[in-house]
Image (tube, rainbow, N blue to C red; front, side):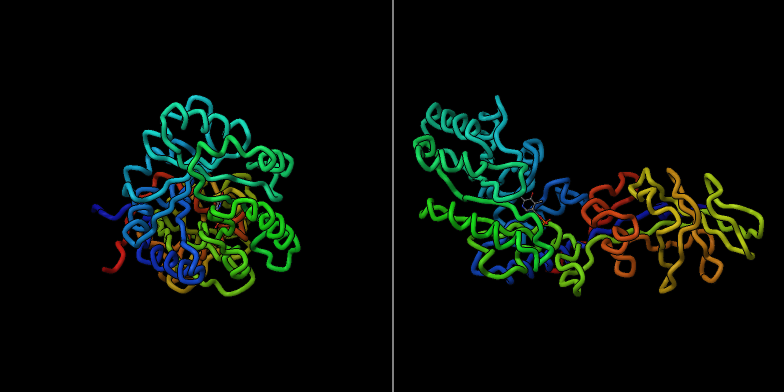
Length: 366
Ligand SMILES: *Cc1c(COP(=O)(O)O)cnc(C)c1O
């Protein structure tokens, strides 16, 4: 007998993705709404994701790496801006210019390099200027920003599109860091009266209109991760992962399950083995803690997650037979729930999704 279905199927609902992006855009209006598609579109596929967002009207995209920006140019139209958050590396100016990529300028050296490239090319090159208001990763330090304001000459060669910064703890609305960053950003921004500003990520959009400025940059919410932890999720599920049961066996005391014999039967137990493991991004920290759904019934992981396999306790799940597809991720087992159980966040769950799954993309409704 052959079974044409794949052992594991990741379904990406682009209709939900687009509807999430539209919901964020509506919440942020009159500010514009970008699409953040770094990390291969948060693990869901930069190509399908950015094409769908572009068709829905998104015209501002953010990626992390230059390589992601180069690739993105094939997915979106020439009228879309593509900003590379890593900034401008030595020797990269010509690539940025040729592919019409906008660097997020993160330090005085990058500003000087991009200004030199602009003078050499005889055109004012597009740039975003990133201020560090508290993350201490990328962006001009407050000292570098002061120096730039004292001598803004390098900027005259550039076509400054946005001044931007990034929030540290936006998913905690009561955290005073939010207001402190906002105040700092407001001060910098006032020094660039003709230039637009961009500040809020997904959770930042929910901090209120003060945080929206001219362009918001939601990532996680577009992909279905709850941007308001602890409150109802305002966005729809985008990724669903269904995995096939390979085998079912009955065991009883004193038999154990999996590597390290970390789980031992204390009663007659039905064990289902499914075709997914940590090589597929189902983190080993889910050992003894994860769960799946068979229909509406939750079934817990037994013992350790191994590289290619996970074992489930299906003693109370009559529908569990070889060939049954179980839901590891989806509307019942949400990305945030998986993350909680694994001791991480939804971003890591999505960006680690493996390459062995068959993938299906559900197109947006016309
Ligand atoms: C990743 C990222 C975002 C998107 O953040 P989410 O929390 O996923 O909405 C926005 N801006 C910058 C600079 C980022 O690096």
